[in-house]
Amino acid sequence: MEKAKAATVYCEAASTWNADHAGKPWHYALVSHDEVRINSGFKYLMENRVPPEQLHFEL
Image 1 (cartoon, rainbow, N blue to C red):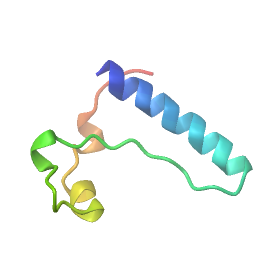
Image 2: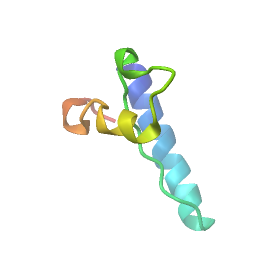
Image 3: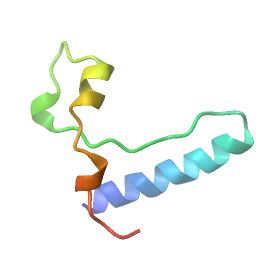
Image 4: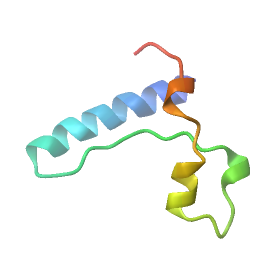
């Protein structure tokens, strides 16, 4: 979970910077290695990511 925390903080920092520079917000998505295949598309991966409400940690 430490990597998930660090990635979430990074996404928040990137989103803050992008908000000031006409960029898009960043969001953290945890994808199981079982879901990643050579033919997995981005939409499929986002539909099958770990739901954000299951990621329980304090920043």
